[in-house]
Image (cartoon, rainbow, N blue to C red):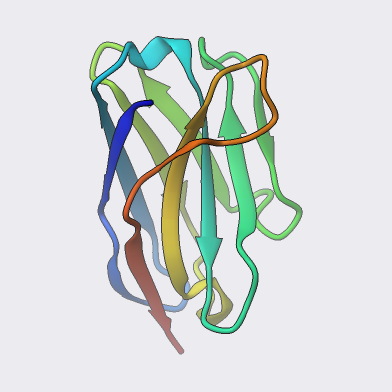
Length: 119
């Protein structure tokens, strides 16, 4: 497994932007497909975005299409989540996760970073 650590969360006003970062260590970062998820209080974990090992393929959850962008820098062992036009309903703990490309389960998770959007 790879160790993951998120950063970049915080308090932002509605309509604002944030960029989350997730740094990986312990294994070769470029071996892993990466994803971003979030979980709000009382709600199930929600898929936000994923990116292939090379960065050439990306996918997004319906609730964030057009507002969030995922990218990665394999030289820096980092995956990013750029978020624009944030809404109060985006308030949640945001997690990055890693999986091998031949599996369907993300088996490495970070500790999460809180994002709070005020109205």
